Image 1 (tube, rainbow, N blue to C red):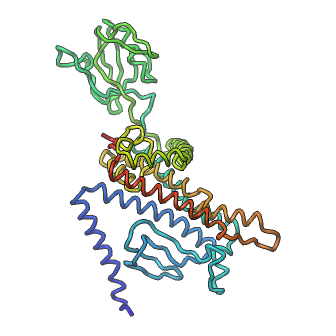
Image 2 (spheres, rainbow, N blue to C red; image 1 turned 60 degrees about the vertical axis):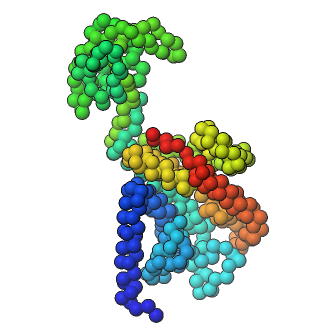
Image 3 (cartoon, one colour; image 1 turned 90 degrees about the vertical axis):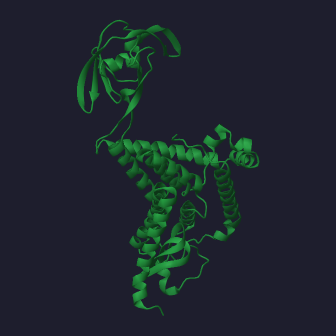
Length: 415
């Protein structure tokens, strides 16, 4: 029997080991990879926590709540639940007895098994993981809008200055304009879209323009006189040479208020949910299976730009993209985490075992087949061929995408 003092020391030893591993990874590959790994593990455990807390609230017996799989590195018993960490940090799990009718359970705990729970409690328990992904995505989207911001079509600013042959500075620079200035108005015309400044400047050769810019929250009035020599495309048509002051425009990133970010976050999540559903249909289509097989067997197909931007990625590919995003800034990293949460949440609710949506489907079938006082027990074994086929599909997707992410990784989308 293990001495109590060693039980108290084991979490410390585990923590020291984790810190040492993080320090080693940071020294070898930089800070982004350890951060991304931590965030992915945190997302997985938030998923499992959703199952855990809803099972507890429903009165189910939760015997295990673990991070990882394989050999136990550390565990502790708190009440009726064992908490711990296992060696392979590839996920996590919550164990509730009675997830299938055919598995024998001690009669003493039968009343607290999953299978004895009411239909609403089963559905809530099974859906809680995907619900947590939705909550995380919504929270991240809100934080991104409130603290980082998003490009706004109605806020146009100076991204860079063009090269003006024979001159050290462009007209805009001579007028005092700087990169990052938001163009508020030109000659009294309030700027509300990207095309307005170019059009107004184009038609004002030799005419001094009064340009109001917002610089660090303060309005400044500048004066610039466009020179002749540039063409402008409007609605696909080239206009004659017109005014030029030498600025390159872009949509500015604008932060929302804490309250104003709420509807924006819901709108973004709604759009991503629709996109995720469409992407899942695409991923499981025969055409995509054929394309993945072709890419695995043909390097030319694997490096085709169109194929690379439409193919699914493995967990390795997701991690690489997240690391690249983190190195580019907080915004790109959050965008990837939001999309991953939404995609995993939707995928996990497919109505087929072994994913959580399969348990919802089985519970719903049992509810529909039950009669007053007589609960119907679904024979899940009859679904074995379908389950094995689905698992086979998942293994094919895992193997092909992992190979492609190793042999032909996607180009860095963040430059």
